[in-house]
Image 1 (cartoon, rainbow, N blue to C red):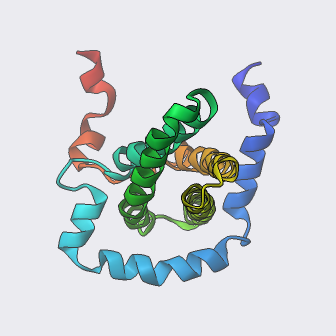
Image 2: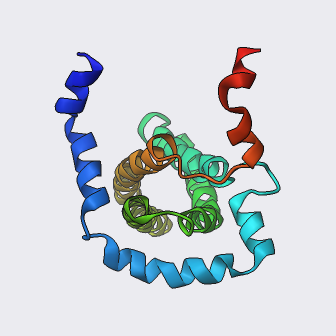
Length: 195
């Protein structure tokens, strides 16, 4: 398939995200998030910390590795580790739940600088992550109540939500270039790669 064919007949996910960018369906969520994001980034020091100015580029993608990794490993241990792996799976689930809020704050700080289409996609990304986090919290509660099968099921629901949300996050970073970065990276672009 040529690039022209891909433009004429994009895959269903591409069409769906393009529709999401132009639809007002996520605008109510964005209106709820905006005051929180505004407060979060009002202080220049807090904004620079959360957006990764000190790092040279956005810290949010780096932060996502810990909760997502912990959650994925929880399900891997649940499905392949057997009964002896349950304590490790439970600990990883707890680590993921603890790492999720600071990760969300860094994402909200990045979202605060987005334009309309990306703002809408980011709002749905936040909803997907929130639903996933609620599912993981339900998994944690079920495990504490010695309902392991329910805990495993809730964790798999959470994993599905994170996969959906991760697709949208990848779209924001890869396709829409939503990400803070040091201006020097824009100036040098691929010229450095040629060395």
